[in-house]
Image (cartoon, rainbow, N blue to C red; front, side):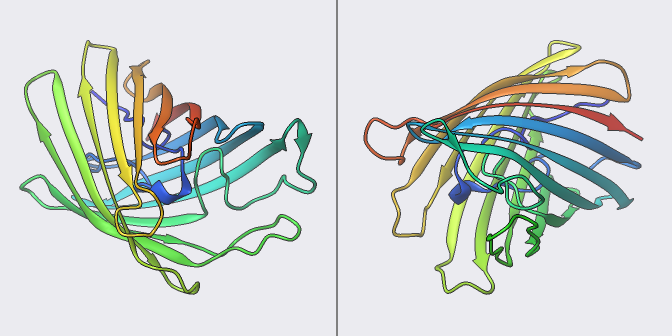
Length: 243
């Protein structure tokens, strides 16, 4: 049975908390998966962002996975006024995704390593993309027949820009009820930077439509670190097809 995790959409509230390209759980034993995701984000008062992303991953050999994420920002509005020339291929603040090439390698003891390279691709007029990457470790365990736990410790590694290294932590619990799997996730960002540490909470559920097709819905809340009286909200959804 194929389980779909919503982490690719969950915990997407702040760019300082850019979590791994796919999820916190081991790669598929074989084959691949394609995903289409959507998010509507209200990161601050009087602002709203909306975007899509296309994702694909494939298990090259057992435990080794390569992935590709292509963000498609759709719109951004500030106090009701849309940003000119916003639509194009590039960083999408709604899904908090960049054009990403990722690699994960999972060890037998439930420990995984990952590297995500964020490529400097942006077709929007006047936007200058950066080249940087994230790298870190993941851990996953099956608590019982219904509950799974996954976690990640990652480092943000700027390549071109003169920025400081940063660190983030994320975790997710899944509880299977058959075709429906509720989930709850938490994330801590800006652990090494001078910015305020962020704390994000995500709740949602994944749905197993059949052995190949699945979907998920999530709501993410920025509970701390985003300024006075500001709680970013992100509503996300995706559909996924395994092959």
